[in-house]
Image (tube, rainbow, N blue to C red; front, top):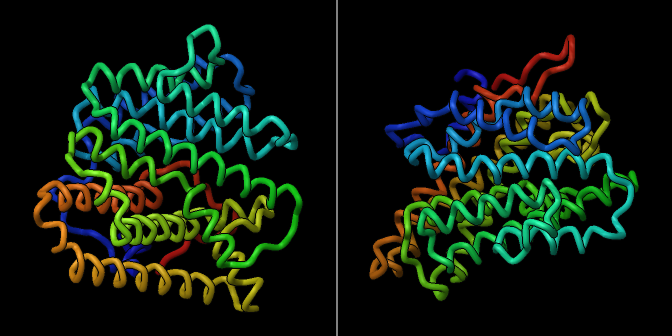
Length: 320
């Protein structure tokens, strides 16, 4: 844990940090990638090495195997979509693709209309229904997924154009394209939480979701900096800080860690000062605890159990 110790402001108060089903989930994830015949062979092999089943296990450490298996389809979709969009140079039909994927997630696409990737979302929808997920949460989840896909498209347009992007604009896009907001919703879906729209969309709750998502962005970029550096991909907060402020990588890392801890302090301040307004809805605290568990799970997977972020030869892994 030495290399994440400076991210001291995070949510270390959970008795279970990883699901006992981690190995089984990773087996399911590899089987999923083998089942999508349209995947490029190199991409399939890359995805199978990513230990994404372990990511699901860290995000939802106390969920049942049935609940986790349903989310394997979503996580599989995330990384297929992320990595395929990185090599795409044609965005002309992307809005239609996003619409089809969103409809599949809501069960509004037939199996005949769905391609192999859309089928993952359609299968997830069927499992959500079988597991008795509240339709309200399914709609919220589908909206979060749509926002993720739209932001991912915007991020890749910047990447393809090779144009510089400012830190604030990058964070505004990446807060959605990082894809953690649907993960927040899923904790509430599987717990059958009763949180009405007027609270879910309350300004305070939106702020807490934004802060939590931004923390995940910074954690991910700290973990993946060597990968982006090796690929000469500037869409990373460490690299953008180096470029925009003219500082060394080491100082940029320290600045990003400080940014993360400032976000955490702000989150806790808002949580303490304002959430009492929702005391009449007991599930609000459960919603926030689930969201915090996802932030922590992402941190642990990114640094401790992910093979997605390989450090280039001669590049020392970040230690703080």
